[in-house]
Image (cartoon, rainbow, N blue to C red; front, side, top):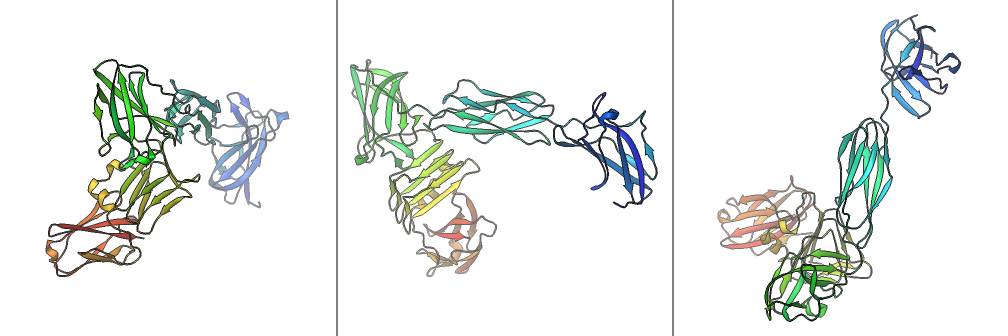
Length: 484
C-alpha cells in the first residue's frame, strides 16, 4: 500500500494461441523482486480483459515481473513477459490489450497405479507416462529395475527378478517431472510356491551315496530338518535328503541312475526359514557305488548369496568365527527362537539393506558381534581370512586397557589418539604395527620408533572397533580398540 507512483495496464491472459482466460477466479500478480505491486482478475463479460494498476516508490527504472494463478488447475505459473516501470505509463488498450503468456506447466500422469506380477515373471511390466516434459523414474527395490528416464509420453519398464520367498513383496516406483508432485506407482510381486514336492525317479538300477552338509555361510551349516537338498539330472529328481540337527547338520543322500557313470548331477536346496529354493554351486559326476564324503569330512554344498537370511537356533562357541551375509535383509532370532554368541566367539553380519536383531538374541560378555549395512557390495568373501581368524581369537574388554603379552593400548575407548606401550624389554625398532578396520581393510602401518611408548591416531577414521596387530620377533599378537 501507499506507493507514490503508479502505471496502468490493460491486458489479457493467454491460455493457448488465440484463447484467453475468462475465468474470473484467475489472478495476475505484478512483482518487483518478492514485493507484490498489483493484482487483477479477467472480466468474462469483456472477453477476459483485465485492468491492473502497478505501484512504485521511484518514477522509473524497476522491472516488473508477473505471476499467473490458474484456478482451474490450482497452479501458479510465471508469465514470460516483463514491463519496465514508468510513472503514469499506460500499457495496452481495450482494442489492443497487452498479452500475458506463460510456458505450459509440466503435467504428469502415470497409469496404471499398480501392477501385479508373478513370482517368476517371464516378461517386463510397463507403466504409461503421459507428460510434455522430461521425466525420470527410480525404484526403491534392487530386485525391480526400471527405465531411468524419458522425454514426453513414454513407458516405464519394470524388470523384476524371481521372488524366491513365500512372502509377497512390493516395489515403489517414483516418476518425477520438474515442478510437479512425483507420482508413485507400485509393483506387487506374488510369493513363491510352498515347499517343493521333489520325488526321486523310482526303481533306478544304480546308485551312489553322499554324506554332506548344507553351508549357509562360511563355517555355518544348516541344522533345520525342514531344509531339503535335491539331486537332479536334467529335470529328473534323482535323490532327496534333509540335514539332521543331532548330527551337526549331516545329511545322507542317495543318488540313482540307470547308467553306471557319465551323468552329471546338479543340486537344489530348499531353505525352509525363508521358503527359498536356491541352486547349488557344486555339481557331481555320477559313479555307481561311489561314496562321497564322510562323517568326519562331509561334502559341503554351497550356494550363491541369498536375498534374505533368517538366523535362528544358532550357537557360536568360543574360538568360532562366523560371517553371515544377505543381499537384502538378515533377521536374527525372534518368534520364540534364539541366537547365542558365547564368550570368545565372533560373528559378523553384512546386509545390503537391513539387519533386525530380535528378542532371543544374546551376546555374552567377551563375545564379539559386528553388524553393518554395506554400501560397497563388500560381503563375507571380501574379509581377508587372516583378519577374519583374528577376530575370534581374543575377548573384548571395554572399557579400559586392552592388553596382550607383547603390548598394551590405552585409553580404550578413545576419541582418536591412543598410546601403544610395549611390555617388558623389547626392541621397538624391530616391531611393526598394522591396524585394520572391521571390514578387514588396513588403515595404518607403522614401524615403531626407538621408544617403548608410541602415540597413534585414528582421528581420520570412522567410529567403530579396530584391530591392532603387532609383529615382533616372528610373533603376531593382536588387541582391539574402540574409537568413539
